[in-house]
Image 1 (cartoon, rainbow, N blue to C red):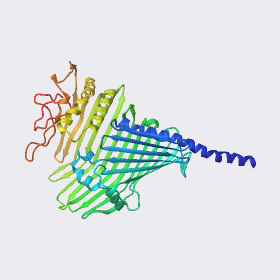
Image 2 (cartoon, helix red, strand yellow; image 1 turned 90 degrees about the horizontal axis):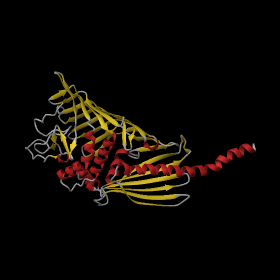
Image 3 (cartoon, rainbow, N blue to C red; image 1 turned 180 degrees about the vertical axis):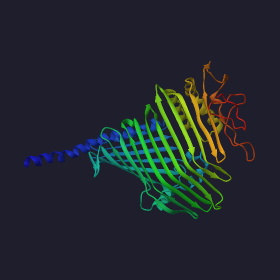
Image 4 (cartoon, rainbow, N blue to C red; image 1 turned 90 degrees about the vertical axis):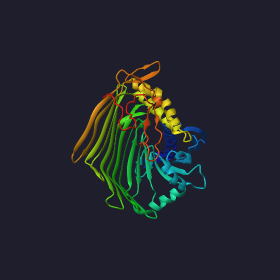
Length: 457
């Protein structure tokens, strides 16, 4: 009996030490996840980082993306639990490129500060393993609580009452990786304005990440969203998302995704004014082999009804082949970095030219590997019949002489692509991408005219 008591007492006495050591391991895991931010968003710079303490510790860090976005973190490591507190602040300048959101931004201003109209706070309580809850045996288990500032939080309280708008639980595996569940409660006929009511069917989602984020998958479903107002009703049913991916090269992933809406309908106060789309589907598949990637995209819809047009279905299926992995990753990184460097005070044409100048070198490298674009299907069907287009666009023998790229045997300057000047009311068609007169049209682009120039197919 005495030996049994000693055998039971040893793990009990050692458990505080084990939990404390687990705290070090989970701190490193969380730190590695935080380091992914600047990797995926190169313009997010670490501006401050301090740390003190031994048995327990506190770490403070700050990240900034220009003057538009600021992220501050405080991480406290304790004996049995740790706490990670993060605050995301976004200035009004970040919304300048989205004029439609300006009224909402003005309403969300809190405390009279025009620099931080949007503030999100995330507080994550991490329970050290190996026993991290009644049903948790892992390195650690965590629960995250989100809150917003000002009128936005007040609005969420009116919608969800005493329930949290979103609940997040995470489990960190012993040998790397994690799993997360996300949920949002449903509500009906919440008053969001004098003549507007909102109903929400809830949200359920799961995410899994492998060690070092070498793979991940996620799935989410939201049954319904309904907005009723004085001018009509918006109804969305059967929303779902399914993604599976694994690392192909550093920050480049391969895999497949599927996003679906079973039905979307907009009805005006006059029932004759109605628009509906059934079975809206977006599917993508990206696969790497022998240092090249193929990427296919399928956008489809079932029956679409809008007065006076009714379609039985519509599809756009495209496949890119022979995309060099290194060139593609460099191009995506350049696009991401260039987009984050944009300044809303700079005219759109100048911003576009600056972006294309940054993309010139990685785009040329990608084109030199002679990618191919297959138009697998572009179709529209009505009760009277179906229109179908198929084909392939190839870059055969593309080369750069003296630093000058050519397309279809003619000089082509990717940096010359720029947005067209917006049309005045009643004037020319809606703005699109324009090309200087006499320049050939690059692959995948068309001029905003009634008769686009021919492309070899």
